[in-house]
Length: 321
Length: 293
Image: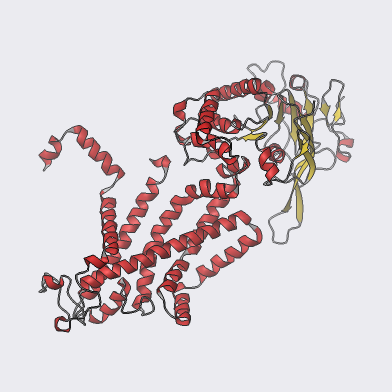
């Protein structure tokens, strides 16, 4: 079976100026630096990490919304063409995106029904009547009713808006949905509804998700595989249950210990020292060594590569066994 | 009066209140005035009691009705015995025409430039921004004087010149709003769906920024009228025998002490029209936003 999505050594670098002085020297910001993963049809890859670690940039790279600095993306074995090209436009029918802020992602001057139909109009599929029928069917499958069709985005609740964004993404029957923090702007009760909807849609339509979130419990619930990112690199990747039960990378350990639980008995909260380093000055060796509680001299000198563990996980740490 | 209001059916009263909320009284008055101006502009040939350049040397400087004049010349006559009412009607048509097309040219050109700058960024944007800054830093009256002095005066040239007056404002607004729309939110979402730039700008970005553009149109429209009036007043705008509001004010100035009506009527029309357009612009801004409805 060919993988639906293969990402190989994705990198996105930005040329920036260091400091605010007039004659500051140029520097390279490595937003994403060598990220690789594969995603099979109907599966979910969860991408977790703190703010600024390159999750959203990875999502945009995967969709071809940002040009790659290095690496390659293959969708069903085909290299992703340049953004804006005809083939890229056609591939939009295979891959779609769900946004963090549904109100921002919707045009507030257009009734939501028309926005749901819009992808069909863009790709000139069907007659207006057919588009309307299809939009109504999709609205129903995301749990909305026909009377929502003529509403405007500001008249809907946050959860309903996210359903509209989902409906718009689904109307082209894509095979891959990139969800960029799809639930973090929603209330907790609505979050569960939307996640359940995503799971139901996956079961029904065989969708693959690239699910980006910083909510580790949600990621654990929806993902078949989890990748933990730190400063533009994947530091640990593997089965969610094993990864969360026994994190191998010290960064994952700190992340997992930050998941709120009802009783703190027998659990130690690891609090990391300091802030994530500036992505312009990534520390030499392991990017995490300055904050790592178990760093040794080797971590300062040598960059750890992602290597397989005995249980099938991949970890980028010299000390993981 | 008060008994009639309190005695009215409460449902009717509520309906009237809702109507007045959607259509405030001031806006209704402004709309009525603009409608009147449009009717006058369209029907100028039938409404004017005399030909606007018809002389009547025996009836020079006649005062308007109420100041010792007769209904034969309701708004009086000027120094050559031309009927002020007829001249006013024809002037309204010409001034509105110039202001309308001038504003339209400015809005179209400016918005297009703004989109181009926001779409291509880089060198194109830099060039357009430089043109904007140049336009904004040179007093337009001087440019207009130079162009009219070099190329002579024709109505078409004059209208185009009026259009060039304020395009930079639209360009600035359109560029800024388009960049912010492109960076995040709906525009990038639509582009991600595979939409062409034409669709993104035409169907999504333009309607979203239209309310801002329309409101600035209602600001430039009066400005264009005033600029036209100013240039005509200086003798460089509309040339006799054609007559515009500013041109009437310009000629009427010489008779300010003896026959002030020649100047006062066109001045009043200028003030009321520009004020009405501004009021309507304010009201439109609220009406065009579906979230405020």
